[in-house]
Image 1 (spheres, rainbow, N blue to C red):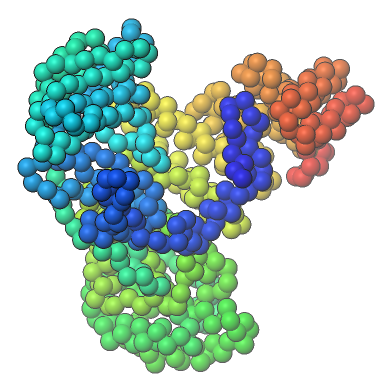
Image 2: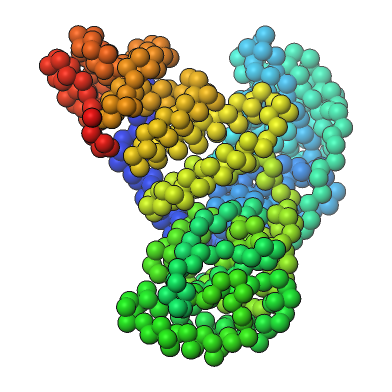
Length: 602
């Protein structure tokens, strides 16, 4: 039974509902499928209530996690083409309808009249088409705002006519009208605008030609544990340390002007040893391509302290003696480093596959990740990618996909909050901070004067979200001064951020360090939060109560806390109400509330 909220008045979704979504997302990230990797199905209506399976002959039987189908006469040839969206790549397919020639059809665009009780888009209108022969049944189409999962077909109401070429009658039943409206002037093969109240099918204006889309193969790639993953946008690689063969600590860092390949290998891994020999036999070509190689042995992950480091060094020298470690001395990767590299690939690749052996990461001269190789990679491919890695990121985009297409990266932004969240989940707060601050630096370079109002609003909201997360991390790592700065910066981008107002007010009123607390600041922030929520939000009222207590007004603090308890109970938030009740008892006893953790009051 679904536990989705059923109406807008419901309380917040239950934790079990949210946990279930989290578990489902976790399964998908591990490579599971919603549909069991079944082929898509397509059925042809053969009349008399029977259907024929035409999945294969139409070419629609892809092994995709299919999600939706949207219909549109994209190429304006009179028949409907298909757009298919899937959870797997390619995420979007265009399937051009080429099943017949000289097709007869007619299409209508509807325009409602709001003064007559119908929206301008006429969603919900029903068009009935009667053809020439009396024995031919009428055909009916309804205009929908959405007719599939996260999709909407074209708002052109399209009728296929078959062998008919005479239109006897067109009628529209408009939302809000009791009687259908008849339209004159429609002819087979035309495209018409039907305006409510006009009674006439007006020829639609000529549309601009549709963008040409290159045809390509539809065969799914062969499944394999190996992969060459080239990134269309190269993320910065966070600082990572390893131990050299002689026991010295080193940092993974490319030389100026040269790319760096970090290769993970083991002495017991035969493909690793074969790959190392191949690299060695092409050492001159790799050197000329501007590529340095760093080999990191991972035997310690399985053997622990039993690794014979001297023998590892001897084997590496014997198999790769011509590969001079110009960038960094070769060495060993411990569990922490491998987990960090695993985290890097997990944040970038939604479907999770553990890094196999061998695995390699290609880092460009600026310290950004250009590619990940799961399994062996040929020296020739490495040489080509090393050259590409020194080029601007835009030149790398077409190499990141194995099929043609057009890019929309300038219209979408990666979710830096989600990326930082992956690092926090893996207990790497420094790397999360690195990603968030890198995002802030990139946003600072944007000329906001050229942004449209909505774009500017979204820009400032994103910055506010990032500062909020940095504030949260700073609090968790006992850096209250940094937290306050980030929360202030978030409010500078969006002054009425409710959650920020509440959290910062509680820092000022309840932090255990005397030097951090500021009763007046807490009162101002909590008062604003209550104003924004009409004194109905339990967290805002709780913050206001704590602020009054910090200022020594325990009577008002208790009064506001009682309101907060009532508001929490009205929302069905029992645990929140219980926590506020514990603070209420402090105020009734004439004591302020102090958060746990951090330095104690001086």
